[in-house]
Amino acid sequence: MKKIINLLADAICRAMAWVWSKCGHSFGDETYLKVRYFLLMRKKLNLDNPRIYSEKLQWLKLYNRKPEYTTIVDKYSVKDYVANIIGGEYIIPTLGVWDSPKDIVFSVLPDQFVLKTTHGGGGLGVVICKDKRNFDKEAAIRTLEKNMKTDWKIQMEWPYKDVPHRIIAEKYIEPDLVTKDLPDYKFSCFDGEVTDVMVCIGRSTGNTMFYFFNKEWELLPLNKLGKQAPKGFTLPKPPCMDEMFDMASKLSKGFPYARVDLYAVGNKPYFGEITFYPQSGFDRNLLPETESFYGEKINLPQKNK
Image (tube, rainbow, N blue to C red; front, side, top):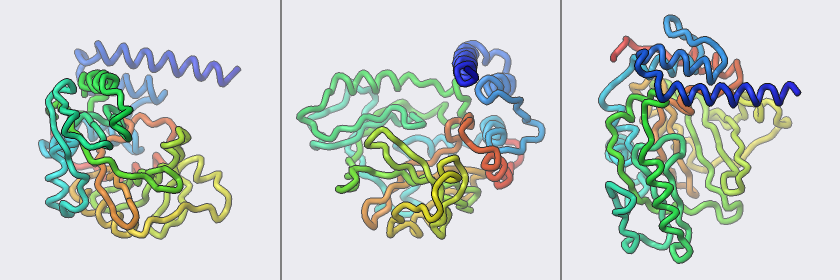
């Protein structure tokens, strides 16, 4: 019964948060985020003296606004930015760019490719084609059109405000031939210091799991799976993992916090994206000790709004 009550309360809070996203901006950015934080996280947002991770991410949304962030969250323009830092060999090739899903020229694309909205976050606006002969183009266009309408104001993620709404096509990166999986490697970075990598496995089966490791490839108890894992549990370490930690460090310098997402195909790393606000800072699945650990690592800059 308690679980059902919690689920109902959560649904009501999320519905109220959605309503607030439609009408709350007239009360000002701070008030908007405070109400939304309370509805989604079930606790008060402290912006005067933020201490934990989720609070500091909301603070950074409001008071750490720099023009270059718009370039970095744009899935198209970020490629040149990253190439200038770590080299173009780590960039997944772009196959085309269009202003509208209806403008996509499917005839120029290979049998396998990935389509993305350039302003999307959190995995939204992504369509994967593994076989063009059996690919539903109309369904893909509908999905992309829906995500072209994403409004940055809902989550108050300011960097997305001026990102052009476009579609890019990228080369399809092959998953592991045995597991049929392509793990994500998401690095937690604090102005160049990389504390850990979150390894995301099982997306191909719909049973996604997350495990955190440090640079020495020791399992970290930063989530429930990590805390409950049997002694000695591990995952395969990509041969290029040390190189990936170094890439994440270089790409995150100058940012109080950033998550750098990379892929590994054999011994070859590839850049995915740089995210400033994972789950927009509203992740209720984080352990309290993880919220505190990451919060202590984030050194807030001077206000810049």
